[in-house]
Length: 219
Length: 214
View (cartoon, rainbow over the protein chains, first blue to last red):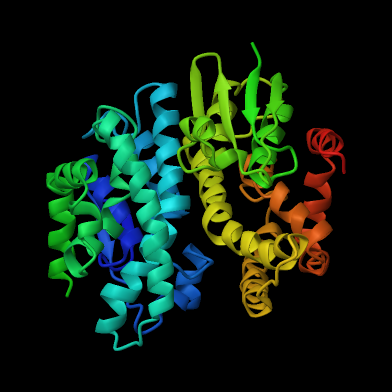
């Protein structure tokens, strides 16, 4: 019987790949349902029923229909607590709080500037769109400040939320991956001692390698 | 032992935390941080919150930052006390989390930029970017359309009860309605308006408004 777990969206989407990485870390089988964004499928009435903002991903299983990648990840971690990486979302309230803190930091401080840079530097050229140099420059400056905070943190702690890989680190994989592999700004990560070390560790996890494979196969 | 909340009582993100603590009847002490004097960028504060933002909390030995992480922590810690802000089943909790994420990613940045351009910069004697403000307003209109649709089917964002998802919106909507002259975004939508009236009349929020001197 096919798994009831469905993820709607293209694997190249950073938010979709965040969910895929989590499902693979947790050893949860899923079906990936393609959404052709170039054709506007994410704005179709059918899709808006499962994601009213017309964004990817959307997630379904036998019990729920859900959107927002970080909410989906937390749900997967709670529902499948005993599967795969059991510590991904912490095993006690204090660990969970630290993970939530750094997932929020990712969402509020890392994601905005890195998303702009990913779009401007990795996607715009492929889509033959004009790049906005001033936007690029502003967001490079913002991202650099964030990475300086990470450099200090990762000098004190192996992973962002503590000694173990968690949702907090996972949440950073999609945007950082594009910046390091598809733009010439990878040095922002790799030239920093602690951030570079951290990036090397988290990006070489089996789960992330599988996501990257899925992304390559989809092109 | 009281929870120390570092930040000004008039800033949106500390208000998110304070409202949660008030809902849950958790004793707290506000440690004022003077943003105008850039207290939040000084070395002492950066040890608490390395991004130089408010709030941060200290609860005996436990320290945390990011308002939405803090409210998740306290809503879970005091789950059985006062209103259940999280939802009962795993699925209900996921829907609460979903709408909290919507606030964080689809709502917050638009409100922040709108308020920055229309209220904060002019207060500092600087010119706001009216084109950016208009763009934010148009996007916010579309977001509120989705909320209107959602709230036509349930009294609160995540279902039948007030949860963290609704709570998280209180500070931002207050800024829109009271300071930015954007009240029509709410009042022109029947269900959003009813929802706002309900959630902003909760005793905990009214207590906070008094504390903030509004």
